[in-house]
Image (cartoon, rainbow, N blue to C red; front, side, top):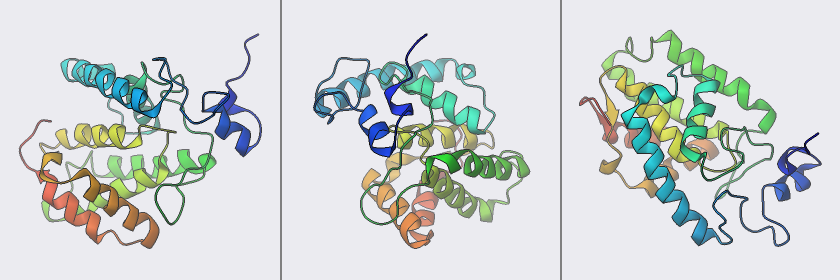
Length: 213
């Protein structure tokens, strides 16, 4: 009988340490043999480039269901070479920057289900009136960011999720129009202050009616 993964057992502190390489517990467990954050980031970037290209060539690798399974399968596709827990929902609380933490782990499925329901109600945004598309996207983006389903890799998998969703209605988010730091700040403001106006500005700046990635 195999032993349970260390990030799934024990109390909060034990699970937190379980995600990290012992005995120093400063670097995330990984499949590439990286022993520093710098090595891990470099390997991650190279491997993700390949997995993104693979997904572009065969979009059917991840079924476009726009629900929790979709979110998990997309993360697994992108990070399968990097993390042993790719596609698994996090088991620990997370914070980033200052302010409120992300959603507690046990509540992630419920919030992602709310996102999925809203996407389904608008027929994958195809029935969303153009004047309201940016606002709906900002709200969905904020909700999924607050869920923050994974221990690492949330931003990249979330951006890909919305790229796939918008392609359904002939739109895309041209992220090269904005600075990533501005997006992170807008998400932080939305999470901590409940103010999505800055995020809405970011989304409207990036939103394009030219389909594709």
